[in-house]
Image (tube, rainbow, N blue to C red; front, top):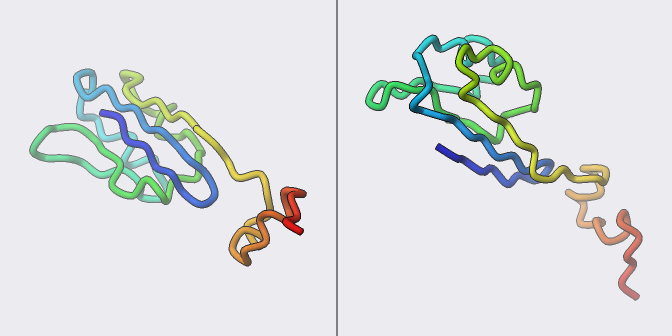
Length: 97
């Protein structure tokens, strides 16, 4: 299962090998941001709130069968206040005059 989350601050790809998941739920217990939930129907963990991930990699490190692979795709390299104020061009040095 592959889930991509393209957020304002970062873009992350979550890759979960659902066939190797043993059901220990350590990823769920370890995540302090409550990103992971258990799917009772398919018997594996999944990212219910991927936009809450802070890239601490604790779930990936805690997984017994190395089922979880978190891949940062892109991170925003400017101040988030500039981004939210619509001043992204100024922050990137691309003044449109």
